[in-house]
Length: 180
Picture 1: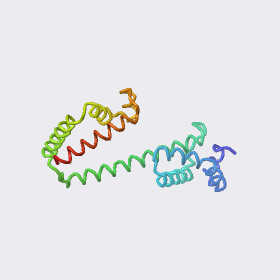
Picture 2 (picture 1 turned 45 degrees about the vertical axis):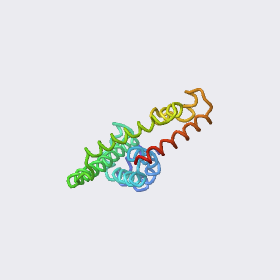
Picture 3 (picture 1 turned 90 degrees about the vertical axis):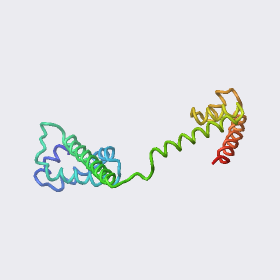
Picture 4 (picture 1 turned 30 degrees about the horizontal axis):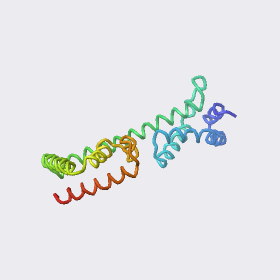
């Protein structure tokens, strides 16, 4: 028996038809809800709510307007989206409430000044490296290249780049540590 026929029987209160319908659609319902909600426990809860709603409102199903599976999956999608929106709204409310009573734990101007001073110190320490060390460190840490990419870019063996990086980072550490 197909889901359409089973849902019509469920509308008449047939519990055995509902058991068969449940076995037929619970997997697709859970899969859809899981993709929307993402949390496994919440997904199970929403899927159960959807199947309970299908039992209670089976009389509203009209086989002329679409299949039973699509009707149930529509219920599932709507319920899952509602759950996500509800959770998001709760988080937003909590954040608004928390921000009303939250004083920043830092002075923005002081933080910016300190960050600027740290940048100046790093630049000064970079000038103390050899040109080869500075080039390797700059490519890796400012341009985001991996050691292998730095080696390829400079046409050097990987071991040479690693040695330059290690020596350069050691000199930077000593310079920054001595000034701190």
